[in-house]
Every structure is written in C-alpha cells, then in structure tokens.
Length: 252
Ligand code: 13P
Image (cartoon, rainbow, N blue to C red):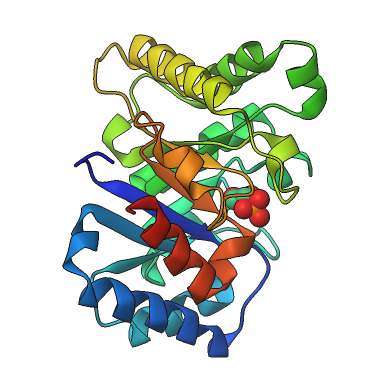
C-alpha cells in the first residue's frame, strides 16, 4: 500500500434510479466514519437522469459525481437526444468518462473523442479517458500499438494533463471476470506512463486507472501494483457492499 491518493470510480452504465441514492449514501457514511480512507477519492459516474437529483441530495464532498459521455459539440445545438459537457457540468458532474469501449463500438472515432475531451476540459470537468485493446489485439501482441494509437488519436499535447485520467480497460476484461496477469498489467501501466510522459513532455503524466472485472476478491492482486492510481469499477459499483469491500480490501 502506498501513501498516494487512490481513486475508486464507479461506472454505473445504464443502471440506477432515484432509489439508488442509498448506494451512494452508504458508501459516503462508511468512508466518513473511517479516517484511514482519507487517502482515497470516490467518484460515481451515474446516468444523466440522476445527476441533478443526486447532486442536490449529496451534502458531503467525499463522493463526487460524474457523467459517462457527452456530445462533442460544446454548448447547445440541434442534436436530438444528446447532452453537452456544459449541460452535465450544470447538473453537478465533476468528472466524465469518455472513449469507453462500449461507445467506441457504436462508432465513436478518435476524432470525435478528441472533440469530446476538448469540450469537457473547457467546462473544467475531470476527464476519464478510456483506452484498451480487444482480445484479438492482445492475442496478436498488438496491445501497445493499439494503446499508443488511441492515445495519439484523441489526446492533444496542449490538453491540461492534470484534468485527465487514463483508464486502461482491456475490452476482453470488461464484465467477463477475466483480469490481466499481474506482471503483464504492471508492464502495460508502465508502458502507458512512459508513452504519456513522452507525449506531454513531462515526468508527471496523468493518473492511470485500471478497469475490467474489478471486485472485492481480486482487488488485492491489483493493490500490489503501486503504479496503478485507481480503479474504474463497473458491475461492482452498483452494490454499496461490493464497492466498500473493494476499498476495504485494497487497504487491508
Ligand atoms: P466491469 O467492472 O463490470 O467489468 O466494467 C468495467 C467497466 O467497463 C468500467 O468502465
């Protein structure tokens, strides 16, 4: 365990209703009662329909809210069914997930993701930019090439790197209960860090999260990799017990 701030970020995807506030409430209560958790930052990225309601109910600063995607256009416009970063910011979002593989698979290009990141950064949202290889790319030894393409395709050197998180989410690991081998994952995270340091010409690159089948049982495997700055948690973030157990077990 390290002394650095670690991020535990939930991605609720298309789940949740008003009653789901109890999940946030329980997480909040637990964290506030345990001082040893002041080394972690909790973010829950919820459906847009819940942002304003949760934001009004949330009185503490311990849990922050985030959104899961936005339209690339910055403010308002004739884009039926879409929501902009500006609108999400007004609803209380502090973070936003962009480039998730579930959106890439529906046609989101590198260029569109770049425009989305640009508009989110303009609103001073913290961007959680997802990258990750699919199973075929992994099997063919193309992981690093894929990650580098995704980074170069959607980031710009002038972006504020302090507002960007990179979530490494191997597609084959999302919702499958399959996770990378510890050594492989450590090497991939190191590769991403080196690549980003080079890209931003810095030695203090954006924080790197891991996402893909993180649960209370396997979190101990990840906690041994100090290079990981936090986690993007899908399924397990829809249960307060599982989410709290992940944090508890991480710091065990
Ligand atoms: P799971 O934790 O359900 O595998 O989902 C990961 C994910 O897609 C987070 O963005």
